Length: 154
Image (cartoon, rainbow, N blue to C red; front, top):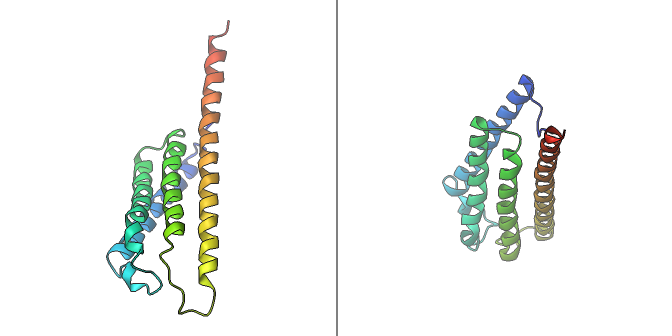
């Protein structure tokens, strides 16, 4: 069982996806940390500074993984990395929900409720992603074990 097909178009599409993933994370890191910087967003409070390291860790780990995937992309490796990336994202989302560094009092719409709902969905999605990647890894191990056993049978 392979995690992705081996044809040339599929490989090229994956590599393009990795480049795009790296670029998006890099641009987000620049926007949040350099210019214009998170302090330019009036709805973010100073409490955001306390969780910025975790948000940066999430973006850096994703960008780094995408760079590695460009050079090293075996079927078993990506699910393993995705578990780690999803776990970091899960931690960041949970901490953001706990701290809730947002102030939407200047707006008529209830952005706080929507933001809490979106963060809850991110948490749920991260848990589902972790479980799915662990199942994928487990299936690879079972499949590899079955192949190994069948090769050694008389």
